[in-house]
Amino acid sequence: MKTLIYNVTLFDGKSRYLAGQNILFDENGILEISSNDMTGDADHTIDGTGLSCLPGLIDLHVHLTMDGSPNAMNQLVQDSPGIAAYRAMVSAQSHIEAGVVTVRNCGAKYKIDMELRNAIEKGIITGPRIFACGQPITMTGGHCHMFGIEADGVDEVRKAARSLLKEGADFIKLMATGGGLTPGVKAGSPQLSEDELAAACSEARKAGKRSAAHAQGCEGIKNAIRAGVTTIEHGVELDHEAIQLMKQYETYLVATLAAPFHIVKNGTAAGIPEFAVKKNAEAIVPHRESFKNAYKAGVKIAAGTDAGTPFNVHGDFVTELMLMREQGMSVLEVIHAATYVAAEVLGIEKETGSLEVGKLADLILVEGNPYEDFTALRRVKKVFKEGICMFEQIEKPVLNYAQ
Ligand SMILES: [Zn+2]
Image 1: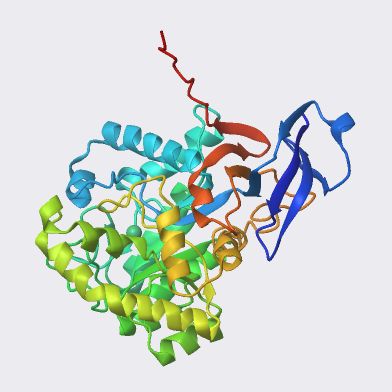
Image 2: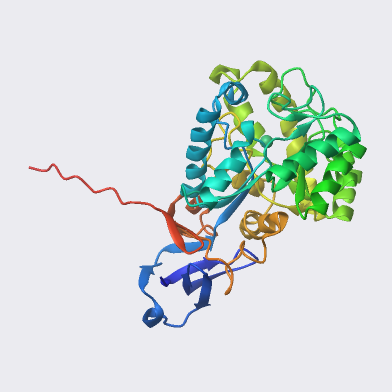
């Protein structure tokens, strides 16, 4: 079925936006974008007046099996496989309703992300496109060891990576340093060594897949870059050398500024464990400085939230995007980071990530113009994945009890 959205402000996901555009698409892709009248070609039309059309958003760092509760790590560890699956399904739907058509899940319990991806691909349920890593690979006692695969030494890490790829992982997630939500682990300390990281990255590459490293401290970040990871997650302590290495290796930064933001904002009073609040409070200032410096130096920035961590709920992508803006990125750069650049990270930039003829019709409609009012991105009206409407905001009827 051919759908036409007419008279809409169109953000292409690359570098520009244009008012008064018409976009015609179907399940196979985008057929035409122009200011020409295409009403005669459409089976179904949508008036885009007052709306903006953007590529379906891509969140590169989510945890679908974590619920954003104050002690989300405990929740994740305690969930049974059934509960984890239902929770992931609900989280995935929240992303769709926020205009996020593609997510990269950076670690789940029981490899539920792979199962959910398969269920969506089989058409059993609807949901976003999921890139799943299954479980992260971590050293014995390392960050997220409670639900990751513990592996020590090059051979064990290689075996873990190969096993995950065999089971259907779309990318490999590696723990290069400690992290803020694992008790007893120093947040920035180096964990998997450069050799161990390189073994896993090389296995991913051979399989035509990508890799991501949780990396907070400087030494671990550099290990991960030199090992050849596709993305540095968090990147709390980036010194000059780390930034230069990221440029040299063309490593992307997925900062997840929203994760420490929500933890520090809500604190122990809201029930977040004290160790997590303390580690995140220490990280928040260097994290933002690192992000700003990386951005200014021209490091490739892609968007990810770490959704599922305390108070960082699924379906709130905009807080992350606003924090990226606060560090100096322009509206169009932020949209680019959450669409086209994120698609590049996943290797799907030829299929999606921008609004261009021939690409998949992954697109969203929001009320207003984000260039003038960024909060327009919170007012998602319709969401299309491959030309099919996945979500439509229903106008609530105005009840009139007047006598
Ligand atoms: Zn994470």
